[in-house]
Image (cartoon, rainbow, N blue to C red; front, side):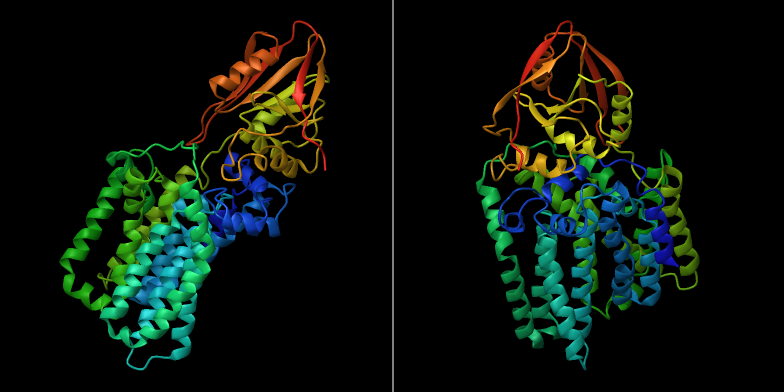
Length: 521
């Protein structure tokens, strides 16, 4: 029943929003050769998500279809957190943890987004659960070797795979290895030091290509820095939204403070019972505290390395707060069922009141606005270039106008916008692959042959702009022979996503535009 509720919340609106820019770029970046994805620092999402995408989906699939990879990861995490809660505090805590995750608004949201964050959450949770399972078995007086070996192999594999899901996994890996090594040396598990060392060796072997990739990334100049470091107040607000997603609007911080205070009171006032509760598994408090610390570690690392902290990179620590709440509820033996229901209802209030999906960039609206205005002989320009895949995926039918993207010179991608079936590969080969091998958002391309694109008297240049820079806007004005621009359609920023404008430039006279044309296969 819990998994069914989680499935409903994660599927009811999964295709309502168009793919936003990063989701659509996933369709393009999946064309990287797998070996290069593993070894080269092409993106913050090293290889696993793109490779699964390459195997399962095409750019012709709907938004709902390509998001099913994250949906599957999100649903698989629900029974997995039950296992983690049961290992930490018992069966009732496992059920409470599963119920909370099923209605946990941030997890619902990212289970419907075609990026690697739900997959990273699943692999991190699987690593933590395997770690708990190994210590539960290794500290038993009569340990069962088969279960111990399975848990250890599971820990090694899922920890290594998380390294290939997203760069922020390195923080969990550091925490998990510290817990694993220190507890192995200090608890009855030290009698199994040999197999623990074998697991560490296996992890090192599996992680070797990724480590080489990380070294290359650190040694390669990277000018793509868009995220600013969060302030202390911003960190607290964002972390609270991930760890305590209760209520909406003005009521949310109040409910968050009340729940946090209630948990702290329970833990402090029932210290004896808490010590007995966690005594069965020495790894439980360490794993929960380690998961809780992940957003703080990511935020602090931004002061030394580069800013990485935002809701989606803090998401994988939410399993720690869920397990902590589930454990705290076990300190109320007579009221735990009622208390668990109340907390789950509070968590459910957010997706019910605010919706199960964040509003995203309205590329379907942008395409509809284009389709209602474009005439034969017009030109469509997408700015900046990396937003083109999102616009193109939203195109329902071809339009009678070519499409170019903005660089120092226009690059013609489609002779008829929406008419090229292999647009994702064409964009990859024309824009992404010719960039520097280590900087996918670079501006270098070509050298492609120049062609003349005639534009008739009275034709319009339709600019679809979202985060288009001043330099790019100036170049578009030059292409359009200085005609006055007029915004004919606008979608404002939606949530944390940028707005979109459709700008029309009417040509006062016929013109010929010089464009670069990437060769066809």
